[in-house]
Length: 177
Image (cartoon, rainbow, N blue to C red; front, side):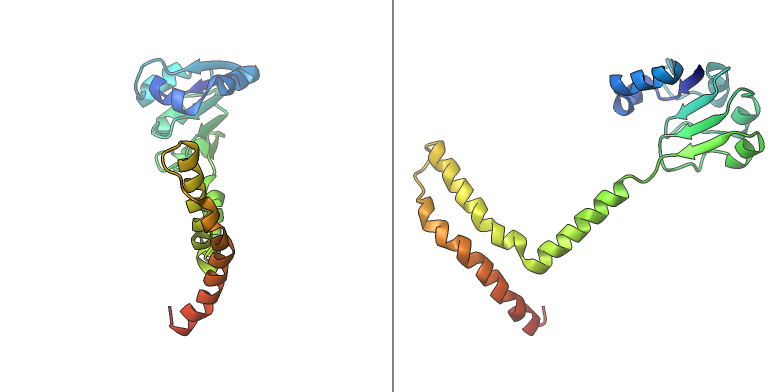
């Protein structure tokens, strides 16, 4: 079974790994943790990870040449962040140690949001759906008995708001906005 060392200080470990993730790692092998309550120095990391094949590195833990040269059992150094500026990849490669890093998983989410925002701005979807929000607010007031709002009075706006937004599109183009 593989021996795995997680460099995360205990406070950071809680943010990165839940019970299920730790159980998954334990299914792969023996898992050791940083119990120092702080970042480890390179020398402390060498001692703590002695005999481990894999180091899963917190984003601030450096992967210095000294670590790779003094860890004969180490096969891989996995950074749980994108940034590997403080990892000596050249020496790790020279020692036959694979260095991996996290992918930029947020890129797809941000791109989807940008495309959605462009469609919204181009079609006026937010403006058209605002009427529905006002109607829901009125229903909420009625249910909570705060104020009796005649929601039925707003129903024509559900049809008219999209028409006005549709008509405003060519008008905005004509006015150069």
